Length: 536
Ligand code: ATP
Ligand code: MN
Picture 1: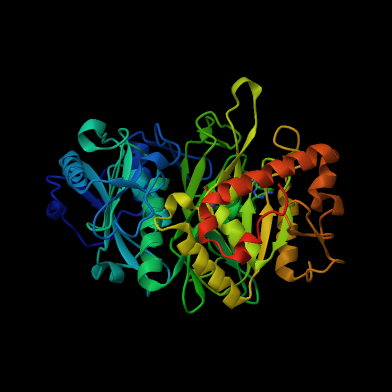
Picture 2: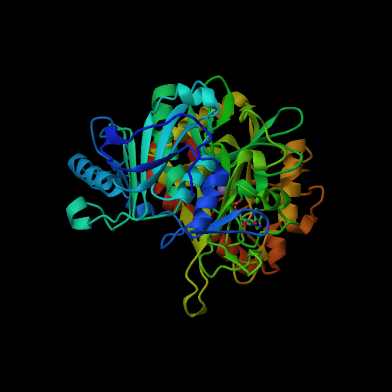
């Protein structure tokens, strides 16, 4: 089909060393959608969205995320299993091989921005092998106007070639797939994987390195929304803990669902221009905002459709990590631009599969710092032979895979900002209640929403003996009552109906917290250490 771009601007890619490519520049979502359907890569769903498959990879591959070690990064990055160093000459060689691969092809190119606050804005050029990856970039980054495009300055370049496979021996990668960031070249190479999340999370990692160092701004793996009187709430949490779900609240304006910065002049801004929601078991009743956002322009990944193009959100035959991306304006109640004032409330979301953390508790400043550095959630181990043991998972700052600097850099900034803002910090267990995974069940979404609303409205009151019970194992303040939630739900011990089993498991989790924290003890103040679980 004819590629009639909305924009009049034309570009060339020869300056990068990409030769003879046919360039589809800045296509609008309808055109990208049509191309995917035409070339057999996508299907239109009953609600007009585009459904595609990302291929072998249906999630990020953290072990294949590298940072080039050079004079910009050598002394600053916290190197290790998370931030894996990559050789500069190997990067150059791999880049050249990718550019050769991209030559002589039909490519999709998009210029976009990150950072809703103009003072922080960076220009990103994304060169995609596939039209649907380019639609993802349209949905997730900020979309320039035609005037902005005329003056567009590209700060960062992303080369995205899912069909290009690295040769580990030759290229110095671990496998055929890779995501490599070079701060010197301001270039990201993504190959061998079609998982779109690698595109957005690479720029997140870039900003997480640059913002604290150059602009004294705290980058956060969190969602954010704002209430009627302008007060901001921030929701930190690892994957699957509820950032996207809980920030989509019809009564509050959405600022963003995953990546934000907290500035020195006390504002919060979204890095992105869209949302990337999990859709496993999505229902209109439970999550109406997300459900109704899945219309034309939305990009569904790895879902299963019936003959009428109806999505079966319960079908996990391709992956548990089924997703949809859409521009933020698919959500009806949004804050525009995506900027908010200093937060009044911060929520740490955790999906505790042991089922022992209270569904809501209030943290002291020391506990807040301790839990932020710990970054706890739980994973449910492989379903092999019917064994479903929860495994604790600790990821510093609730986002270690995206944090190139030492966790204490972010933790200290957050501590200072929280104190300055006099913010309330809440720990929310969106995970299991009534027992661990396998015995108990996931906390009802309506209860979690009611608890968050109560915290936001001030209904939970001051931490006094009358209002709160101090948890004997975790030391956190557990409200005794909460509007819209039965009292028994607020006490995990009561939901278990098995005190011995409850305390045994709670001690086990507290011990896991302490064991994990050992590596941070040398950096932690007395106040932070006093925030650890008193038992375990
Ligand atoms: P990611 O960082 O991967 O984007 P996320 O923190 O945004 O993850 P969500 O996409 O919000 O996580 O996923 C939370 C999942 O858990 C959703 O599928 C949601 O329906 C489900 N869920 C079930 N019970 C709850 C609850 N009580 N609170 C929040 N989410 C719940
Ligand atoms: Mn999310």
